[in-house]
Amino acid sequence: MGLTKEQMAKRIARELRDGYYVNLGIGIPTLVANYIPEGMNVVLQSENGILGMGPFPYEGEEDADLINAGKQTVTLLPGSSIFDSATSFAMIRGQHVQLTVLGAMEVSDNGDIANWKIPGKMVKGMGGAMDLVASADNIIVCMMHANKAGESKLLKQCSLPLTGVGCVKKVVTDLGVFDITPDGFKLLERAPGVSVEEIKAKTEGRLAVQGEIPEMVV
Picture (cartoon, rainbow, N blue to C red):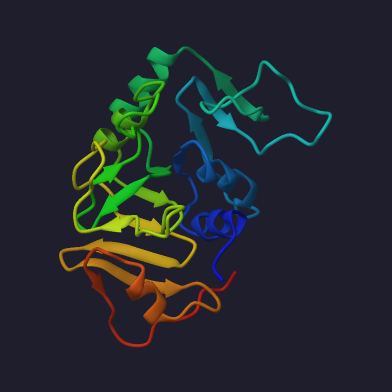
């Protein structure tokens, strides 16, 4: 049981607000573009140099010259613009992006994030994540609750090289939604069919559970 990747993206889309400039990281976060509420004005920014990115194209309508930072083909909305990476990172470093959604390999209960390197494995580089976590005021992490070995990815302390320290505000996993608080991961919602006991068993970091935890509407 638990949320699909699409359901996780749909839940994160509920965190968007009208007028937001939003950066979506590689992986599950890119799916958020497909679930922006109708009538809401959100401008998607991609660090490879796009402002006004639209949803993924339909099959057969792809343009190989229009890609996001993860090299996926995307669409452009009316009024969008394309520019160089230097301008894009000036936007990010200048704190002109209100919300960043990132994938991660690990998150600690004080908001540290590790999402760029597994020691001993080939890595292409930091990408834009370092700038995003250093500059954004609101960072939401979207990831699976456990790794392929069944080990928790919500930890007391990250074991992998850090991308940012104390920067994550909220985590959405396939099991639930969590705020980062002084008491650790505060459970806000649980996925349909997932019990609080299961979440406790699969969370290695400090977990705060207060009162009755509502089941998420998906």
